[in-house]
Image 1 (cartoon, rainbow, N blue to C red):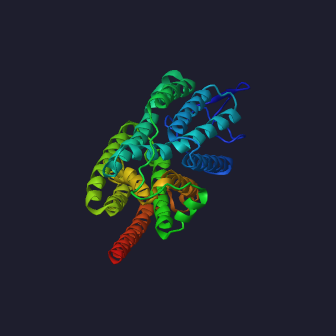
Image 2: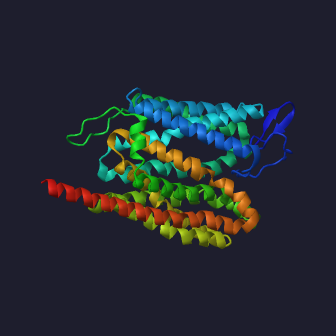
Image 3: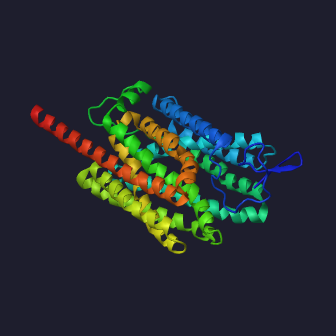
Amino acid sequence: MAVEGAGLEVDPLINPGEEVQEELPKVTTLQRVGGPYAVYVVVVVTVANIFNQLCSLVSEAGSLNRKNILSSCVLFWSVATVLTGWAQEYWQVAIARMSLALFEAPYLTFASSLLTCYFTKKHRSIVLASLTAAIFIGYASAFLLTILDDALGWRWTFWISGSPGLAISILMFTTVKERKPEQPIGNIQEKVNFKQTLREFKSPVHILLVFAMVLRNASGFVFTYNINNYFNHYYPDYPTEVFMAWGPVVSGCLGTFLGGILADRLARRWGTIGRFIVIILSSFLAAPLFVGALTTPPPGAFYWLLIAGCVSELWIGVGLSVVIDIAPVQIQTSCLAIYFFSYNMIGGNFNLMVTPMKNSFGWRWTMVGLVAGSLIIAVILFIIVACLLKLKSSRNMSDEDKSS
């Protein structure tokens, strides 16, 4: 993939001044995690997540509805993708990619919040699991797009991949209806402000849950962005893209749907604690499976990854439903935005640790430590949060008994 300018071809992922390579690997991932590019990534992630938080506050204050924000973000994201195909200079690619991050950031927050208003609480996990399944379809599609890149070139890849969103944004704007969340009986909706959201996050439950989700997502970020380079490093002659084009979408989608169904069933019996059971078991069982995948040569590694991907992704839709379960109704969107801000800002930047750790401990043990190690620490934090919620629920029931 290259950008044409001044008679030269410039890789849009390289830092200005770097020596240009004539060919890039067929499947590109985040290969440069140091220097100016790392600074650029941190700035983009920060700006995008602040924009997400601002949008959520404006929405909950009643100034904008979520459907309009969603359709606008899809429209501008698609425009930025298409415009990337016309880029002629490095700075044009940088601006286009910042725009992609900016308009992608609010999507999951507002889509999750809006969907919970369309369905009852007893179906919350499976609904959000259906939404997050799209992540794996998109991830696998990225590998399939390399075929299009080889056939038509990188510009056509951006033009074609960005075009469907233009139609989808119009369809979303004209068909999706804004719905307000149902208020608990006897609860009067108050005007939302940022201080109210911050007060909610002073509780130990939210603080510990934020750190648990940061570590849980950091494990996934590190694995996703480095696994292709990892296999290319140890097994350069093995066609990893053959598996990566279908393996993640099959195991990831299957895992999210199973997790959503299981969590909803357990929640009917034990409430939010039932959802935590799925998250804890998923994270705990996934850790040794990822170790097996990282220490076994192909094709055995891919059998491990199929199981690990399914077990690991049991949690993803369930995690969002847990956040919505424990957040006050009037600030659910803001709470989701804060969680996304936290684990994107902290968890997303765990990739910056890969290079220094790889130089000290080797790539294999770096991946094992950051992927499996983060999962185990997250499990401990999730258990603590579940215990705190159980204790809080018991106290509330005790207070109700006393008042009656």
